Amino acid sequence: MILGIDIGGTNTRLVLYDCEDFRVLDKILSSQKNIEGLSGRINRIVESYGINAIGIGIAGWVKDGRIIKTPNINGTIKFDLTAPYILENDANCFAYGFYKLLADSKIKNIVCITVGTGIGCGIVIDGKIYRGKGLAGELAHIVIEKGRICSCGGRGHLESYFSGWSLEEQFKKPIKEVMRENIEEFYRLREVDIFIKSIANLILVLDPNAIVFGGGIGMNFDKKVVEEMLRDYILPEFDTEVIILKDEDMVAKGAIFLAKETFYWLI
Image 1 (cartoon, helix red, strand yellow):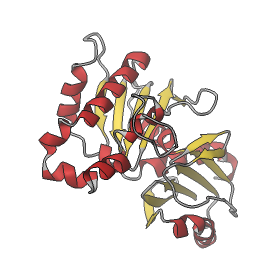
Image 2 (cartoon, helix red, strand yellow; image 1 turned 90 degrees about the horizontal axis):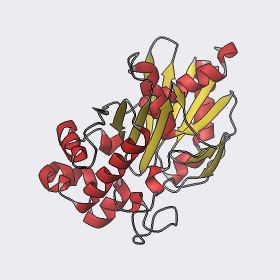
Image 3 (cartoon, helix red, strand yellow; image 1 turned 180 degrees about the horizontal axis):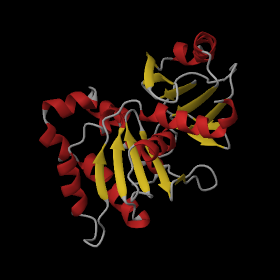
Image 4 (cartoon, one colour; image 1 turned 90 degrees about the vertical axis):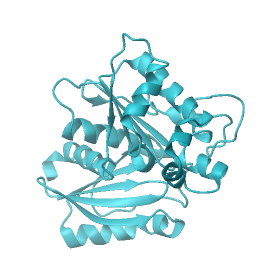
């Protein structure tokens, strides 16, 4: 039995896997109290369900299994768990989960973009997560201009223009609400254009088979509109497929597969 955990900036999801089916056990707010009490909650689940291994995907910078920075998460995260676990960046988990569950045999190279509280970017090349020296994929913190302050402390990063938290600061309401009220106006925002240009540049650099959008905001993108906007910036020779994935549990599922492969002798 494997437990998959998705620790996001807004919500934390816990998913159980018995090597056949996935089952959502719990969804809680990522409040400081819940984050700091997460180890206790996990250990109670380990005891109740006989968990053999745990996979954790977290919205933060993870290198060599260590948390480097979590700009969009409140509270101090310390894991004191009673079952073996693996820790990975949430977007990497999302990308690996998509690759394992949904990619066909022709899709070996994918880029997955999660848009929720912040922006995540997971890259799979030849069926393996690409990490560089450990922190590859931090699209959220590419510099657009010397402008707005980012949640990480930097200035002018993509996430400070386009993300759940930055757009909510601008509109004084959740961006999902803005999208529901006037979706056409949403796609005309300068911030959306900045985001699309950044994705187009990523496609031109990596030329992936597919680019997959997910996350609380990303899963609500209009595929046709995104494709049209990208065509304005991508050379016609590039034919990357655009996929919108409406699966709130893909981070946890990807973390489960990583745990299964890491602790295979326990499963």
